[in-house]
Image (cartoon, one colour):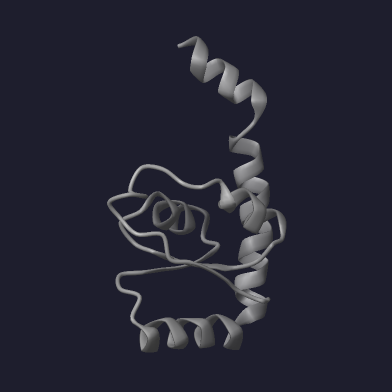
Length: 100
């Protein structure tokens, strides 16, 4: 698959994730997620896909088409996002956070 769709809904996923972001970033795939979720915030922050306000089937299909049409651009952004995410999420960083 060229694009990964993760339609996790708020409020259940407003402040948490399933951990799938690590898998998708490692696969270097652009993501489509929903706004107002932790994943939506991360996708916007890392610039690794599109965060949608609403996930109706026509909107989702159009968004998939947008990424596929400009796939090279979204792929490069996803490649860069993996490096930024990996730098910010290390075992030493977690240990420092816990030590606070």
